[in-house]
Image (cartoon, rainbow, N blue to C red; front, side):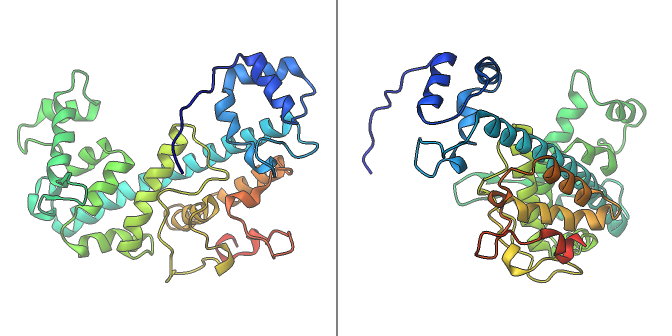
Length: 315
């Protein structure tokens, strides 16, 4: 398809409202709708229009502005729920990484052992990958920061050797993306396996899931849409689950419901008493008119959604 010149002109909030009306959207309360456009922006809301338009730029009959806002609100609550789960899992991953490495090598400062990490290499796009140096750089910046973390300052004020704090302090500095990078950077597969074993996942799958956790965490942090999204970094399929998983119709790993099942699987290992199922049920009950099939919940071919609660992972 040949490219063309972008010639759309900026519209006032009033003109945006008029455009929506011209496309068939029912707007019962214009002042309230105008306030939403001023707060959220037309462009952000437009991502929620598509499922309500069988014909492009024409809303299905009877669709209201309130439905769009309700869908936006549903997605916001979904992001908050997912973000909370990722936080809990991130802490468990950090804990297991510190514990498994420190216990196996009987070394409080294993992160300073260059031999435990892969040698630097260039990836497919020509970027240098050097997990050991990247980790050391993070630690160095933390030590020399104008206002260092209290636990880092305590160490540097009281100890001169080893130069760096112990691993249980240093890894607290890492984001989930950096934890994922360090995990991939371990040289010995046996180290990766010890950590992944806690979560009953093969190291290759765990590596993929860490990458997806980072990606979705960033979507949530930047308030991006989860509902009705194809995941750009999809979690690898779990082909050999330990314990309960889910049946084939639910295994669309491009959609967010599969990712939520990944969260459930990990939480059952890290926090068996988690309330993810109750919270997800509550979310769906508060928004009964949201088309949740766009999350990747399958149907029976006749338009009836399959009952996700009956899947083994959710029992």
